[in-house]
Image (tube, rainbow, N blue to C red):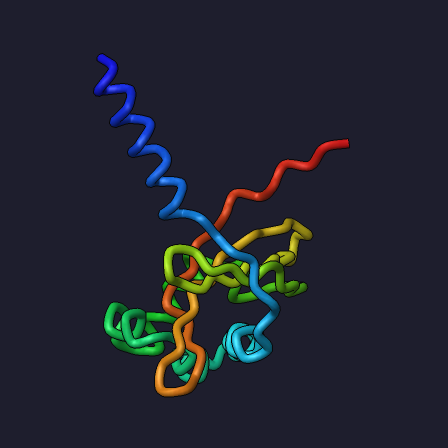
Length: 138
């Protein structure tokens, strides 16, 4: 039993290390890339929006039209935000994640993490994850 508890403690401490994060200074290039894609979505310019995606995303969706349809259906707050605010840029397990807070047309806040990659000297979006909104306390 003691070995089990020791092993469990070690596993939990290693998990914490894997997910340790460091808040970094804002990176204007990252923010410009994300804003550029959002601006393209606002114009229904899926071709331009697709250029901001990393190769892994482009390989999954293959065409700007497929990509645009996915965003419209799965991320409507990204397709038509009323407001965009940039939160923390964090380094997590060797990756860079930019928090973006979007206000949708109904006034609801949405928190997203954009995984960013530098490809051929340009920041590209390698994934987007919807986060649970932080709980507010009085």
